[in-house]
Length: 368
Image (cartoon, rainbow, N blue to C red; front, side, top):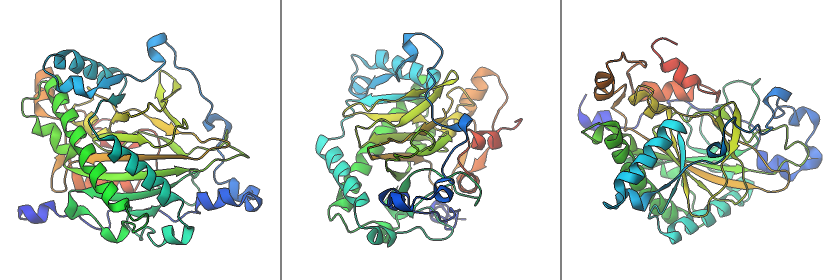
């Protein structure tokens, strides 16, 4: 197989069962019967009560990493140490001073809100097709019996440009495509630089072994309607770790909702103006042989306010493989804990699974 064929984006890697549109359900509370709402209600032990993490004051909030200091030779070592600690101890951190222009961020926010407020028929014209994840709908619904998330999503492949399915790119709002293009490029730059510094922190001399997992990018745009009758019994996004390399999340709304699992509790990630929320994905856990671990997180919903977010997922291009890096395994004198698989096979595994904790990592372990 030649290089061009290896890099091509495969089709029909996996999709999701169709589900009701939650924004539409929330707009018609009179039609929200117990049987309909019952598909979203969680058992008491899975309901979204916040349990504080066990620990001192340092456990109260997600670390903040100053991106500008990472790139400044005068402060780079100190900030890189802060990044290392965040990756080792938390798996999550907020990135400030990332250099994405305010206008690029603001335009993306406005066009995302504009898209989700389009009439339902216009959004459904971009609905996912059988066997695919791109488009408007939901993801990781593999059974008619599983509990559903109180949210709708819109998924696009954004980088490299040849991976895009432009039939799913909306024409309304009229500036959406341009806003997404500019935002996508800027966020991929941030992800690549973060991975390059992570490689240095890990003692990996060839930084491309990590930066390659920013070679491809997709965007998951989330809309969480309020749920007045049962906000304390539903979840906007089930607990899971991200089955990607590095995620950079923009919390479009000031409404809190993202929570991460830490020391037996759920820690809220307060929206920090201008910040991107970064988290270590399952692929980084595989590459580092578990030195950096992906962390479970979830989204809760409000009783009265909508919430919008967009997650930029960064992974390697098709035709490449994921497996523990020799520099890390060899330097530590340890055996690989995870299998080596092709990007295609990994994506098929991910898209055939429901969101359920760290189930993808369990499937990747050599000795579960």
